[in-house]
Image (cartoon, rainbow, N blue to C red; front, side, top):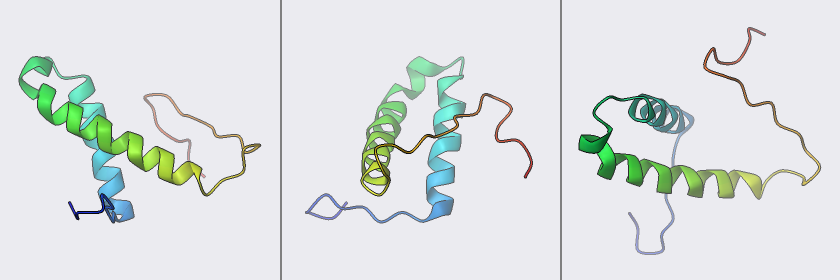
Amino acid sequence: MPANGTTTMTTGELQQLADRMVSRGTSRNLVEQITELQDDCWLAARVIRTLLRHVSPSDVFHVYGTEGEPPR
């Protein structure tokens, strides 16, 4: 990571992060993956905070369940 703490991520990398978090969060071997899960949670929190700087406080978001986003 750069010295200033800034990380540039593509949409694909963000999707991979989300996929890893879902996979690790439901893993039966969670204890073995705890370090990676901690790293992903920390990074995901930073991403969420960064994204929130670009939206209005009055915006509403739809958070979908395990089935994912419905087809458009």
